[in-house]
Structures are given as structure tokens and as C-alpha cells.
Amino acid sequence: KSENMAPKYSIVIPTYKRSKLLKQNIESLLKQTKQDDFEIVIVDDEAVWDKETETEKMVKGYFDHRIYYYRNKQNLGMVGNWNRCIELSRGKYVTILHDDDWLEPEYLNMCEKRINGDKALYFRTRWVDLRDVRVIDNRNKINHALKKLVHLITPSKYNLTAFSCFMTVLSTNGVLYKRDNLFELGGFNEMDYPGGDYIFNSRYILKYGGIYHKACLSNYRIEENESLEVAKLFPELIYEVRKELIKYTKYNKMLLHKMAELFYDYDVRGIKIQWEANIENDLLKNKIDRNKFSYRINMKLLKIYVLIYKIYYLL
Image (cartoon, rainbow, N blue to C red):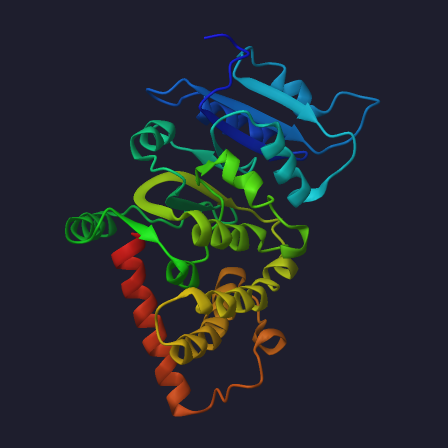
């Protein structure tokens, strides 16, 4: 094929001053199996013109016609750079990959087999916590055996709906979108930070649909420098999105509003555990009486329901 022909797939990577991690990312992409019809679009948001950036220097070391490097004339910020990546892509299908994350070698081959019209493809993500060098998706023998059993008795894929978005905070990691649909939706919105990917995925699924596959094909790093202050913004934002999603579900609206309130507390406590920080006094809403016996029972029921949901749909 001519190098000027548009590829079928675009893997776009917004980046800023993380050349070492980006290099690992690129190496994983060049190992894609049984699928060569793709481009790697790297958009560097380090807007300096009096010198060569470390990122540019590193990318120049690759002599591969599938790699395209661009540098912004001015710093666009995270969300602006996501949109710039989409603009510069040429493929019919696009996946957005953070510069410190990576895809499994069979990712594109699996996408090729599973493309279904306008629907976005979602895959399970493995979380790697670099703060204590552990893989959250623990691979010990007991867990592995349980997952094999779960896979035998649960569906390997399912259609995503408004209720799926209500139950699960979906990121862009490993998601394959139809490029034309990204433009039709207007891309990502700066005003949705820091939950722009969750809000965008909800909008995409409501309009075009999505399919979740249980194959684990993407990897997400949690790093020391991730901001607790940013993480503290999520519970309120997700709570507001869940309230909006309730309109599009077919289930009891009153029950879902109650679940959204409980989910807020659930998310706050999740951040507390992840960051080992006492943030409950700052974030928990006052309108719920948390001393009531009924509240404690409802929280336990929610945790059980979330566990069952994750086992059935996400593992």
C-alpha cells in the first residue's frame, strides 16, 4: 500500500514530557499481531520551538512509516490535545491511548474480528499501580481459576446501555471508536474535566451504542504524581452524570436516584482506600443520615450488587 493511503486504524497518543513511558507505549504498538493496517499518531503538547524536545528526539529514532509525529504550536492542555489527536488521525477507526499506557499485541486483531457498525468496542483494562509496583488485576492461581469459572458461566460480551454507564465509569483506555462519530459528537469538552472521558463515553453509547468484551487488551498505569486533588473532583461529577443517565434507563427512577446517592459515598470511600487519605469529611454530602441502620444496610447491599455486577459483566 502507498504510505499516503488512509489506514483502517489510527492509534492516537497525546503526550507531554514523558518520552521514556511513550517509548514503551510505541514498542507495544509495533508488536501488534496479524494486523498491519494502522498508523500511530503522536501529538506532542510541549510547545517549544527553540530546541528539539526529548519526545521528538526519541520518536526520530524509529524508522517506521506508520509513525507520525506532530508538535502543537501552543499548549492545548489535556482535553484540547485529545481533540487535536482526533483531527490529525486518518483511520476509519480511532483509539486514544495515554502516553504511559499500552495495548496488548492482539488488540487490533481482536478489534478486526469484533467491529460492529457504529458501536464502540470496549475491552477489559488491567490496572498497574506503580506506587507499590503491583498489578491490581492479581494473577494468583485462585483468582485465575475463579475467573476461568466465571467466564464459563457468564457472557463474554454484552451491549452497553445507559444503565451500563450508570453502573460503570468507562474511560477511553482501549476503546475503539468510529472516527466520523467522534466528529459528529463534537469531540471532548473542556468543561467536563476531569471526567471528560466518562461523559464522552456516555454520550457515545447513548447515540451509537457500545459493546463490552471481557478480553483484557489494555493496560493503565497509576503513578505517584497523579493528583489527589483531581481525584477528589470525581465523586461529585460522576454523581451528576449518573443523575442525568437515569432519564435514559428503563428501571425505577426513584430507586436509581437512591443508588446514585449511595454510589457517591461508595466512590468517596474508594478514593480514600486508593489514596490512603482521610477525605470523607471534605467530600461526603450532608443530606444523608449516615448513622441510620438503614443507611448501613443499603451500603452493604450496594456493595454486594456492585460485586455481582462486576463478576457477571466485567471480569
